[in-house]
Image (cartoon, rainbow, N blue to C red; front, side, top):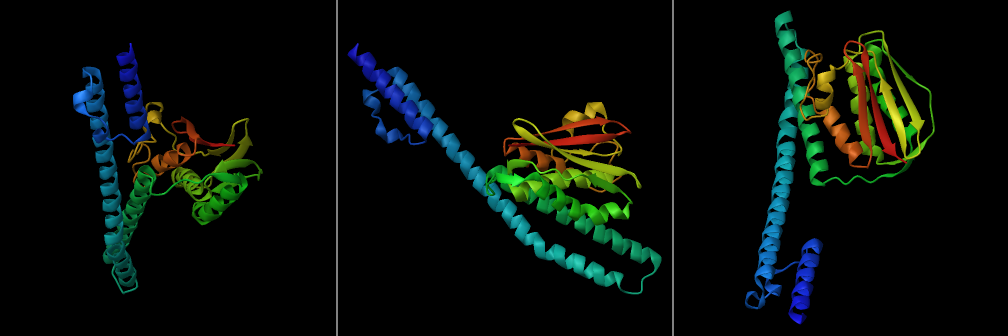
Length: 277
């Protein structure tokens, strides 16, 4: 009986050490272990090695993404600068068109790299979300202000009646998430239509809903639209890389919230961001 208690006590300590991340194989003398204790020892040792490898892989990924971002920043900036200088020259119509295409593709590449950097930093924990109590009206009005000129160029109205509800969110990152959703609504909506933004408070969440009259999403595509690089069949003619909604979901779920979508193909979509109160 005493031996059984000793074994259970040692097993319990092994598990506690494993859970707390303080397990050290050197703490245990194999010659004094029972067969069961030795199996626990092997399991915890392999688990610790696996956790260490995962952490090392995460660090290498962070370094790789950071290096890519750093090394591509100057060449891309130079390409855009030289393209703008080229467009200022006396060019025939065909050459001007080619210069414009170079600029579009360079801007697309720059956007893709920055999106990947943001996604990587969120996934690896380089950037920590810091939710604080804020008025959701602040981020809604800020995002609408950023997108206003793009909406005006398509004669699209963004309708919003200010509502002052307090929720707990990281202002910078949540603004990024909302920007991606409203930006998509503007991009995929026909000219001279309207986008409606509404805020509503529930018991546990504050909801920000964005409704548009765009292309809509086929029912069989709804489960896939938040996937990385996924682009629906109705929007492939538009520019984009298919990472905005993925990034938005990562941001909102990382703060304990969630995003839903309701859509009818050809009749528009309603995206709802639920932010914890």
